[in-house]
Image (cartoon, rainbow, N blue to C red; front, side):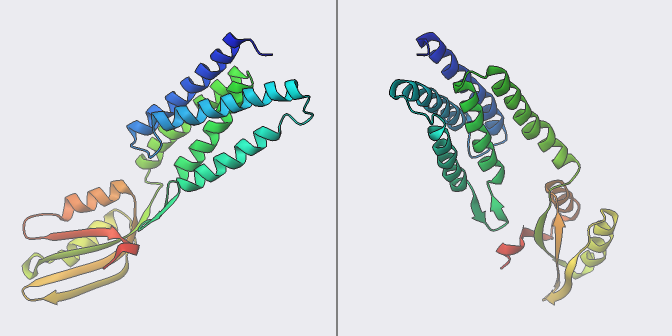
Length: 219
């Protein structure tokens, strides 16, 4: 039997590791925050401990059976975090984070503190540092549809061409049309969040209507 104080230590350690990851998720406004992460790590740690205790109590020769069921259950929970929105699949990072949180909880429940701690550090590095680098280096892009409506005198079409050429963003289905005294410039492009913000800042002004939406949500 595992001493009671050791059971408490494993549970609190697992909850702490989940809390560390959950804080990062809350700061980035991820769907699974501190409570969800704590509960995932705590639950899997407790289930791992119970699995060990019951296998010894009942003489079960397959103590890993419960662990395999945990993996399957967490898989369903992760799938529930993946959504299909207008920009494509969303929640893949959340689902992967939940899955690794379960592994951290199982490691803590098995008494492998160093492994659980090191894995938590790796997850935080990937979420915080690599996530920041992805945004700064414009590695993550989305397919967006852009429409600019402006008075004919402003010649927005040439300004759009010049801006996107300087940003090295290729355009798709570029089209210029007229409606009354206004010209309408439309095109599709794959842009990062940072590039999308730059386009809005550069082209938005009084008299110019700016619309940038995911291509799937194009009216």
